[in-house]
Image 1 (cartoon, rainbow, N blue to C red):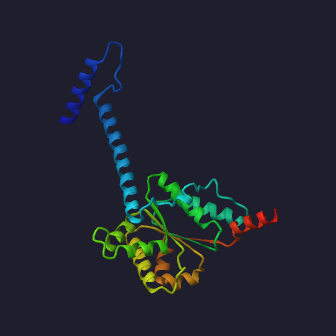
Image 2: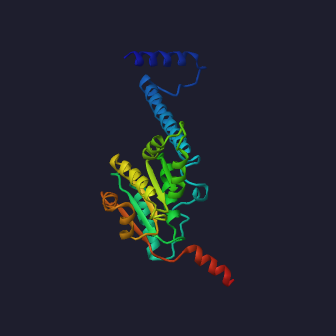
Image 3: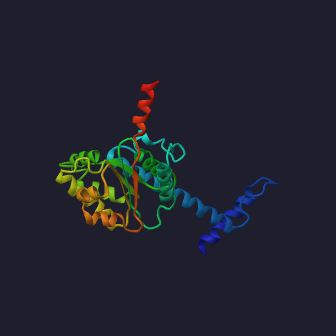
Amino acid sequence: MTEEISSSSLLSRMRRLMPAGIEPRFKSADELMQWHAEQGKIESARVNRESAATRLTNILGRSGICELHQSCTFDNYRVECEGQSKALAEAKGYASGFGVGFTSFVFSGGYGTGKNHLAAAMGNYLIGNGKSVLVVTIPELMMRIRETYGDSETSEARLMKDLCDVDLLILDEVGVQRENRHEFIVLNQIIDRRLSSLKPVGMLTNLTNHEMKTVVGERIMDRLTMDNGLWVNFNWGSYRRNVSHLRAVK
């Protein structure tokens, strides 16, 4: 009630100070209060975006999407076969429906098949809609974790928490070092904590579904595919190899 009276008084003073013939933007105290509420939401969203960007920078010292893939979009993804058209549709559907449940995804296929492009396109789309996204390779992540050892300012526990706070975490090169026991343990900790917090995980790998189960374990794979979890096979030739072949022919 006091706030409404204050708004009415402010509106009255504004009318008295305005030159003759100039109409105030707000006709009533309710309109002024509604405008203040909307501005508060806009400012809150801005602060949240800046906080998310700061958290991502603290994790790896860079933004969520590496510079190489910051220009990747759905529109500039090249479609040359039916499988690529399906993969594009799946990626678009995942991005547009993000936040409904906590669906995770796996993109499986060889190098140069466009997994990173579509994953980055999804990330860039979500970032544009106010979400925090981090795409990181397993080697880069392991190196960052090792850097926390003995660092009182950036502990492993704090890094793990930051990784679990991101709206979408996409892990690249999963299974590259499949014999590394420490990597297996850390990967499982991250995935398990995120899924327990209802936060989705994306994975980019060249492993098959069976091979993935040996890397992250059947329990984690079962949890990843819960809630209509998405598995997309990128089972076509390398785009980069095709481009190199065409250049050699020319």
